[in-house]
Image 1 (cartoon, rainbow, N blue to C red):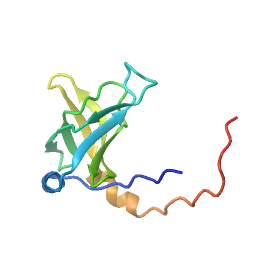
Image 2 (cartoon, helix red, strand yellow):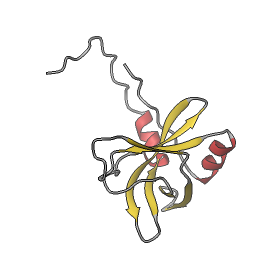
Image 3 (tube, rainbow, N blue to C red):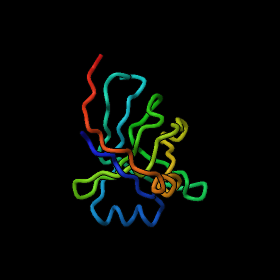
Length: 123
């Protein structure tokens, strides 16, 4: 069974820190043009922050259908969800994502799910 991918906050200072530590940002989703194939953009750029660092503009290859897809930080072979793609700004050719700073603290207060002691069978 796969582990739950943890979240991490994201703001301009943390972005610089993550980059200095060799962090790479990855976006994975199911786009409208390939709805049954998971697509991946490895090493995408996160750029401007806005709305009190709650939003970040990015250059990940996200399009319609990718809303809700994670932007992950890969560092030292581990992944953390640092943002969630929510829109595409076609005029500026950028994606817009909700930063992990918005949801990270709230998720830390939740109890983890209990371990699964049995496998599910397909119907």
